[in-house]
Image 1 (cartoon, rainbow, N blue to C red):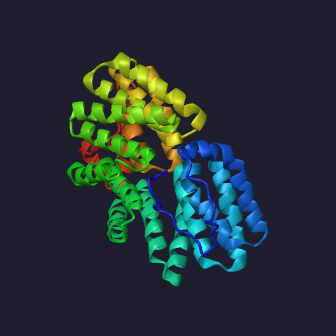
Image 2 (cartoon, rainbow, N blue to C red; image 1 turned 45 degrees about the horizontal axis):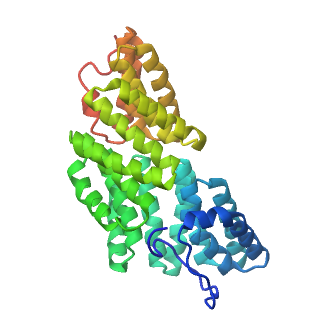
Image 3 (cartoon, one colour; image 1 turned 180 degrees about the vertical axis):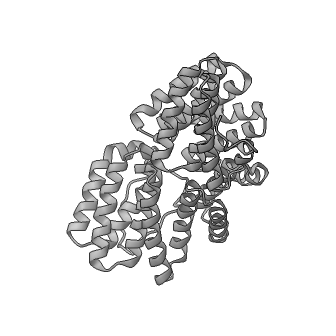
Length: 384
C-alpha cells in the first residue's frame, strides 16, 4: 500500500518464503477478498499461543483496516493479539498492539483512551530498548497532543520522532510524520513553519501510499487557503479529489469536496460552496466521522450567516459545537462557538452571542490559540 514495508514493526515468527505467489497488483482488492480469512488467522494464531505470528499479522494489516474504515475488525484483531502477547509475556508484541490501539483511538477521536494506550506502549518500548517502535509510538502521541491542544509538546515530539525516522531510512513513516507536523502547524496558524514540512511530504510521498499523498494535498490546500493563495488551494484539493475518486475512498473524497467548498466560500460563490458541502456531508454520513462532520457544519453555518440566513446558521453551528465538545477538540470547539456568536448577533440575540463569544474565548485561551486575540478586548467578558 505504501510503496514499501514502512512504519511497521515485525516479529521473529518464522516466514514461509518458498513458492509464494507474486504480490497482488491491487492490495485493497486482495484485502477485500481475504479480510475474513486474515481475521480468522489472527484468532487461530492466538488460540494456538503463536504470539509472534499473531501480533505480526495484526501489525501488518493496520493500513488495510484503516483505509477501508473497518475499525471494529481492527479493534477485534488488536485485542485478540494483545491478550495473546500479554499471556506470553511478549513485551515487544504487547507494546506494538498498544500502539495500534492508540492509533485506532485517534481515528475514533477517543484521545483519552489513545493517550492511555500510548503511555504504556512507550514505557514498554523504552524498557526493552526498542527505539524504532518508540519512535512510531511517539509520532502517534504527538498527534494526540496536538488534538488535545498541547501544541508545543506535540511539535517537540514530532521533531524528535522525525530525526530518528530520517536516520532509519523509513520513508513511509517520515512522510506520515511530516504530514502530521504540517497539519498541526497549519491548524495553529504557523503557516511558514508548516510549508517546508508539507512540501517535503508531497515530494517524498509522490510514489508511495496514495491515500497518504491525498492527505498531504489536503493540508497543503488548507495552508494555501489560510495564506490567501486561492488558486494553489483549488489545485491541491482537485488533485486530492482525483486520487480519492480513483481509489473509491469516500473518506478522502468527503475531505476533498469540503476543501473545494471552502475555496468557493472564500471566493463568494456561495451556491457552489453549499452544493460541495452537502456532497461532503452525504459521503461522510455512512462513515460516521465526527470531526469531518463538525468541520463541514461549521462551514455551512458560516455560509448561511453570510447568505443572510442566521437561523439556519445557528442550527448547523450548534450541532458542530456539540460534536467538537463531545470529542474534546478545544480549537475547533472555539471556532464553532466564535461563528455561532456571529450568527446569534445577526439574528438579533445579543445575549446568546455574548455567551458563545465568551465560550470561544475561554477555549482559545485554554490552548494558547492565536485566535483568542481576535475575540479578546476590553468588553469581551462584559454582558450586553
